[in-house]
Image (cartoon, rainbow, N blue to C red):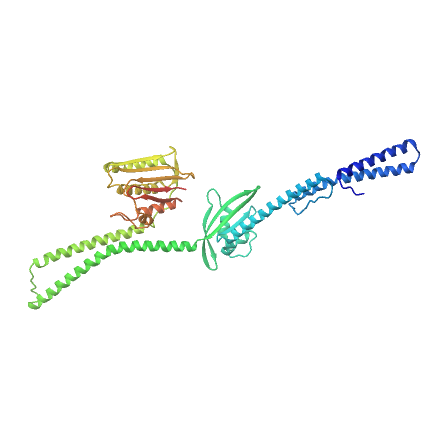
Length: 466
């Protein structure tokens, strides 16, 4: 018998079961029809079983729906089966929820393919490893840089790329998250800038490694540095050699002239009786003497220039110590306060907080700060109100920063690009060594130095420590 409505079906089944139970009671109490009684008992049992099965049909939809969510299978459909309006609405809601899940999954899959395409398209190599060094993702750029086709575990790189493996396995996100790694690729040395970071997703630990071949950039920068250095060297050498060559030519021409005069005079008289008036040589000898002295000075200047250039390569490794900025500034102030006072310079040292500390070599850092302050004193020479300040504090990232500011003539934008090049200077008697040495010292400390200047307003040199 087919029931169109679930509710009607349940009612009819309950009524039939009730009627059958009453009939069974009648047979048991009023008759001795044992076979009929037994048959009704079997029928009642079957009716109860069929009623339970029929009513449990409502749980099937719930079970399938929950299974779909648990096993992430949203292919199930829910259609009306003529069980009534309430079941039709329930199936419709199930279908709507399943459709929403399908849309969310489709969107996530589209986003995943979008990100995967981007990752594969970028020219920076990317590796993602889990805690057991299994490769979860590697893009085409990384495969090309490492010269491999497939990579399943980090240990596959140990034979050919041990330096890279060492960095990945030992990197500390807090202290060392990037490194320049040299790899041998097809008998060539590749310079890779390797950066690493770690993330935790659902209690799973992952490392994200980026690889970038900067060999061409290093070559370009090296070539640019050499060109700038050669430009400065040739400028300084030509400035010294040109007057030497010119004076040497003049002296040579004068001596040749006197030689001709002496030879001509000797032809007119005995060879052992060459007599020329004293005033004939006096003026010329003074000119020659002055020329030779000039040649000597320029030669000595050229020698000092070469010695200064040699000093650029003799910076000792820093002896890092924990320094109190308060004590450091007190030492600098003691060394320079008299010079500042004589030049009517308002010199101010400030720092915040009072117990601010940094890690540096005290002697090298004092040398850098004194050099910057000396440059500042030259910059404010022509100012009516001469002001120089030195301030130390922490920036937004917690790093210690020292700024040296003056209100002098400033530095042009073009000069700012070259000011740290060895031997480049904007001062008349400058050597062009101080700022270059300062940059090298800061790099040895793992820090940096940069300049910001507004011509005719101010100049600020910033030392930033790691």
